Amino acid sequence: MKTAPESARSRDVKNRWLLSLPALAIIFVAALGPLLVMVLYSFLEKGDYGDVKFGIFSLEGWTSVFMQRDIFDDTWGIADAHLAIFWRSIKLSLYTTILTLILGFPTAYFIATRPARTREVWVFLITIPFWTNLLIRTFAMQQVIRNEGILNNLLIWLGIIDTPLQIIYTDTATLLGMTYVYLPLMVLPLYASIEKLDFRLVEAGYDLYANRLQVLRRIVIPLVKPGLIAGSILVFIPSLGAYVIPRVLGGGKNLMLGNLIELQFGAGRNWPLGAAMSITLMALVMIALLFYVRNAARSGVRHG
Amino acid sequence: MAERRFDIRSQPGFGMIALFTFFALYLPIATLVAYAFNANDSLSTWGGFSLRWFASALDNDAVQAAAMRSIIIALWAAALATVAATMAALATTRTEPYRGLTAKYAVINQPLMIPEIVTAVALLIVFSRIKVWTGYSGLGYLILAHTAFCIPFAYLPIRARLESMDLTLERAAADLYATPWQAFRFVTLPLLRPAIIAGFMLAFVISLDDVVITEFVKSGGQDTLPTYMLGQIRRETTPEINAIATIFLAASTVLIVIFFFINRRKPQA
Image 1 (cartoon, each protein chain N blue to C red):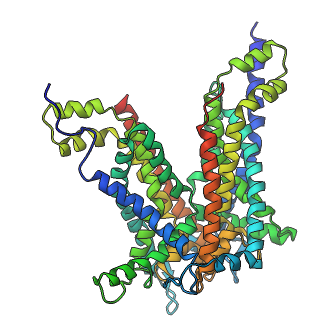
Image 2 (spheres, helix red, strand yellow; image 1 turned 30 degrees about the vertical axis):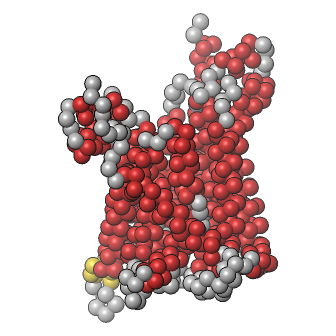
């Protein structure tokens, strides 16, 4: 008979859908649904006091992402400020990824090669910062790099400088803050990858007269490539959408994408533009994720 | 075979860079905590040891209200997220693939993929419209928003635990005439309890920490502790913020340490 197994199977699948319903419903109502509404808003006309005028279709929100209307002769020109902010965001995100890689790889390697008993302690030490509140860490970094902060005080006390370095409220401050905050996100996947490294391959390399640099470049790095890619994505994506760090450390003039978006819903009162910019940011993130998925799949094939 | 002259696992300079990294990770936090005990009004000059800023923070009505609000929202969000995540984990593990399984994974993890600022803005748009329609402007919006982004975090440890449990015990229970509900309640749930607790604590900390989504979704006078701190940081700061941050830090760290110990216990099955 075929009916009994068939009906048991379909009942099981139906039950699993019912079990999934609360999570799916909550996420749709408070995450996916609003995103769809935001897409709709990006095609409406700007309201006089923020918000939108319903029923009036408009492409001005999208056009304004990179173009702006000249207030004198009503012609369209490039929105230099927006382009500068987009470029700053991408540039700082790339720099953050590179810096966290330079600091993170040796750190992860160091942790992965500790004896088993002490390794847990080191992993714990890298994880505590990861779970520490992002705002508190940003505030802590602010206090270090302020004009009267510990860094400048130390340098003056050592006689290296006479007047404080102006680090706070610069792109450098944002870069330092993001590197500081996102570093654990680079270390943890790298550690997971290096921990699985078979050091017999390293030993074989040395037996064949490779030096340390050659072993690193030809054996270790190719084998931990999945961790490198995962860590890079985990740092680049939140950097791109950073809002708190540039707000606290970058000051009012060094905006990143997140701040520019927020501006449209605050003083800028241009919700369609804000919505369009949000979707643009999301698109950039999706592109980065696609890159990651493709490379992850390729790495999987190689190892298999 | 000749004795090897060096440790094949080591790389020159890596140890130093690693130690510098750990130092750099902890120095700012240590500085922040140290100045919470500063007797001076200033954040720049050490004026001796004092607990005055902790007293000031604990005595501050706005801080008390914000802390209470944070805890209420986090408890509700973590509880709802954990229940939803447990059900979702049961639905998506220990099964042959069925239509829609991949889509479920994608939807459940979607809050992790979208930049927080984008979700925050989308919620601002929708909730501000709903607030106008219904007149309701209570904490419900914050609880709902927090629940949504906490679900993936609660889901991870619970799903991982389920993956490591095979179906033998449930089948044995069924063979002894237990109903599916009885099998779940007396077999699956007890084995799952440490993971559920871990998921709850993770969700609680994530909700407690959130500042971006809360900043956009909250109505007037609904600061949580992080959004209160964000507002204060933009003005002239006193070490009171350091004291608040230190207390917050201590609470979060305690929760995370407990989470680690729960996770470290040997699986019982």
